[in-house]
Image (tube, rainbow, N blue to C red; front, side, top):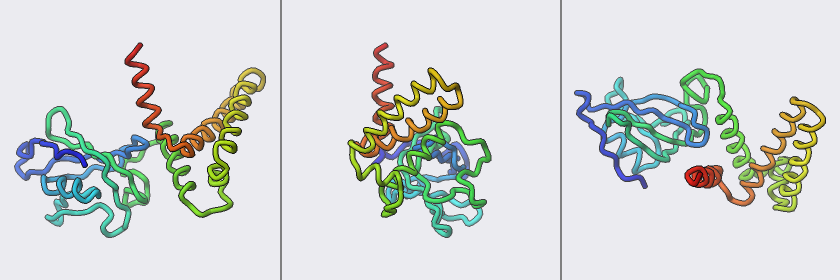
Length: 203
C-alpha cells in the first residue's frame, strides 16, 4: 500500500488536480482525469483508479460501466505539488473509442515490448493447450532454455551472413523466447532493469 501523498489540493479553488494515468508495464500514457483528496484516497484503498467527475459532481470509478477498469499500482506528485501521476494496469481499452489510450500516437518500442510481456503473461495463465507460449512454459527450462540458445546462435549467424532484415527477424525471435524464459523463471523485467541501474551506478 502506498503512503498517502500530500499534494497541494488548494492550488485550484475546486480542490481538483489533474491525474495522468500511465501504463506501468509499457510507459504508455493512457488518459487524463481529475482527482480530489477523496478520489485519491479511494483509489489507494480500493486498488482501482477512481476520479472525480466534474460533470456528474461525484466520484467515478474508471470502468464502472464498461468494465474496463484501471488497477492501481502507484502514485507520485509532480515537482510543483499540483499534478498526479498514476501508474496502473488497464483491463481492456482505456478510451471510450476502444483504443488502448485516449492519446492517439504511434506505439513506441517500449510499449511493444511491454505488450508482448503482457501477452506472454496472459498465455501462461490460460488453458489454451494450442498456445506455443503455454507449451514452452510447461516444458520448463529444458524447452524455453533450448530455444534461447538456438535463437542466440541464429542471431549471430544472421548478423555475419544474412543481412540486416534477417538479423531483425532473428533478434525478434530471441527477444520473445528470452521473455518467455524470464516468465518461466518468475523474473520480472523490472528486476532486470534494477540490476542494469545498479551496474550503471557503479560505472
